[in-house]
Image (cartoon, one colour):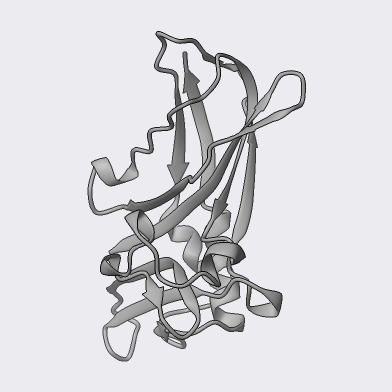
Length: 184
């Protein structure tokens, strides 16, 4: 089971200016094929050379209480005492003392911040948006990156609060995202 928030999506025009999608809060559910398809609307026609987004929910939304849409508490991604769970990973691990792991990674400020901004340039071709077109940006996510940084399920199999271990796993997972290619 893997869920995470992609928010505050921006595209950089070839002149260096940025277009930001308003209210861009998406919950990706890796257990469903359609859960990983994000559809942007209102992108102005033009050519774009880069993409930026946040992995997690920004501080303004975290301090605004439970909300609607993908930010609704019904998705199981909200802690009333501290805000949104930015990344939620649960699974089976033969090395865990419980034979399972549950990582609920939250925290949006200071040393406990698990929100990461990811930036990608389009290396082979610009993204061309036209009124009739349906361009696509394909990303790959290597979920094994959770364990590229010192935390092992044998030692830490549960994280349900902000803190240093949540920050380590958020850093690890931020490295999982790779721009694969663009379709125009």
